[in-house]
Length: 120
Image 1 (tube, rainbow, N blue to C red):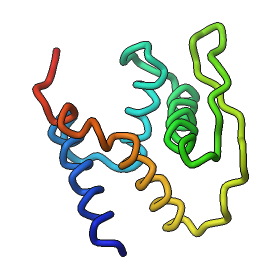
Image 2 (image 1 turned 30 degrees about the horizontal axis):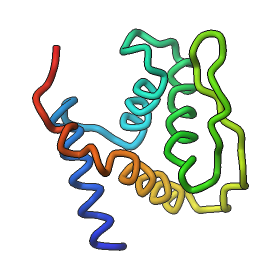
Image 3 (image 1 turned 30 degrees about the vertical axis):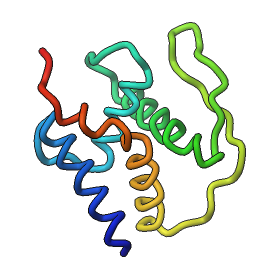
């Protein structure tokens, strides 16, 4: 495993845990990204909405790599994406690394603001 990548992932995870509480995993982070990208603030989402939020997050973080393109928002404000290229066939561990790398890129420039003071 790439040492720099692991350091970057640990830095991101630590910053998010400091801001939002410990014990976060990849799905928790995708959920947060989905809520952020939806732009409607935090609320109690139904199970299907939570799954949709994680899909929004995956599409969002994989857009810079050319896998998806943002095509607009629907009448409820939900972002929609169109597949641009097929995702490579990867083992689950490789999929995890692809998403984690994309999350590092997504948060990269904003790491300092993540671990900043919490707002109520």
